[in-house]
Image (cartoon, rainbow, N blue to C red; front, side, top):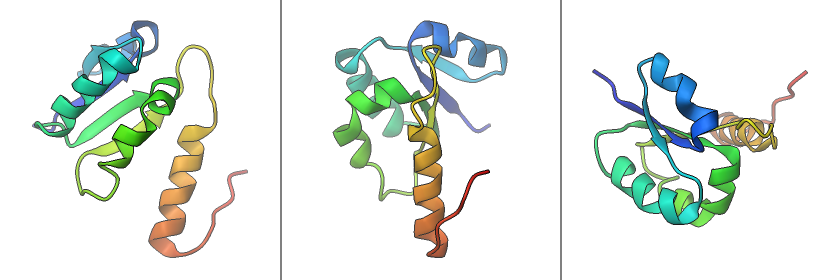
Length: 104
């Protein structure tokens, strides 16, 4: 079975547990980076991470960008959407097809 992890502040991620995803609460970079490395190098081909936490961990996440797995997907937290997740999707599509996309 495919294992999917979700990293972020507890309030933002606890609902994903009800969907059968593995949740890993982390409040800051110090907690999240070692956890992210462990999951990324382990059996988690998909890792969701809150936008605010991903912002703090840009350099660490970049190390995995060229690898096939894990797919790192940014999600908004309870404090709102920063737009980083949507921008990440746009960048990936542009890289894949060589053209920009427009969200309406």
